[in-house]
Length: 101
Image (cartoon, rainbow, N blue to C red; front, side):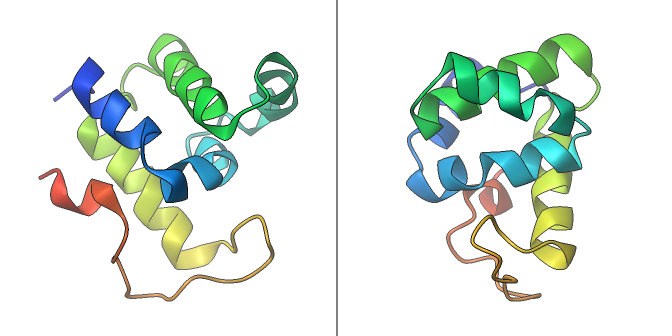
């Protein structure tokens, strides 16, 4: 199932998701675009929105509920967030993508 506009708005409205958009971009193999996205948008919500648009254009097979959820879960398991802190390995609380099955 492709991400629908209402799901994108739901993700962009979640501050925790927005704060971790760079990690999600890296997991979706869009890390090389991070600097450009940051130059184009100052707010994290706009950066997430732009990254999702880029994902849709560059990697349409990842622009699905399953693709984004998978990218989020991989990040949560093995990559620290931008503050350098590793997230809990089994805690999915606060991850709105866990409820999208």
